[in-house]
Image (tube, rainbow, N blue to C red; front, side, top):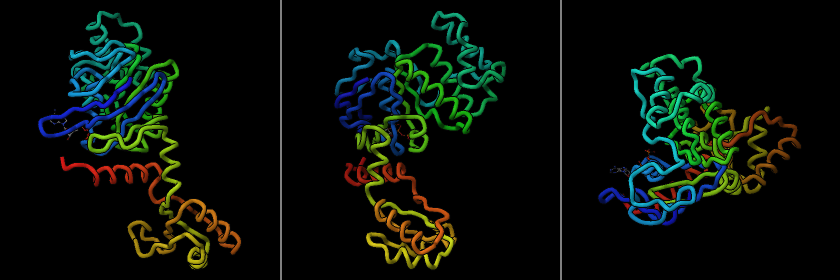
Length: 312
Ligand code: ATP
């Protein structure tokens, strides 16, 4: 899938402002961004639910024409999967298969893949959000898509559900399917995707491997919590460490624990601090970033884009 200078407005609202995104075969690609960033709008274009105002969109090697139809080989959903609440999970998939003129082959496998075998005979009305999401994924799997488009598929998933979805997406990608999914949670995406595109106010502020984003965040200064065997000695040592600041008095970040020290530093200064603590015979019990590096990168990039963006 290749998007070049794609733009899309709704009246005065510019939802997509000339974005470029490329998703290769066999890649699980995450779209992340704050509410209103344009994620669903872009996914809707891929599913043929709307047309772009400008730019070029190529899906599975073919340019998207001016028709509103799901392109061949594409499956997925935005705004939750469309399901019949009065039918069971199995019947929902059978109904979808019939609509496409297919038989019931593959339904049991698709349900097993998303971990819904035990509730195959239960009505969807009683399903939780996470179960609906997984059934939506099973429905998409039945079509053997080459491009799978999912809007917030991790929403409502418990850790076991996330593992199922992760396995399914990895397997699809290993067989060459391109997967694009959205989330506004960086940690969910990091668990599911190798590459991410970060959207803010309709623009791409980052597109590339997740590890590049993490490396970028770690190259700058971050805040870390430090719990040590001797908090007073740890504070003295930290105050003597060059290129490192001891932050005081933020009970919220310190979790109301006066023995936890909050410091701000880049990785080399942090390494220096640890060496000095060990040298001084102070035990390090916990040393962790206050905000995970990925989340920090996300916040920094989207905040910059917001500040630079036009009022919407
Ligand atoms: P969220 O995380 O909240 O789902 P998103 O990144 O998916 O957000 P979009 O739903 O793509 O964002 O919306 C982008 C912008 O376009 C928003 O300002 C939204 O209000 C606007 N928008 C989207 N669809 C429509 C529509 N059909 N009519 C009018 N405005 C719309």
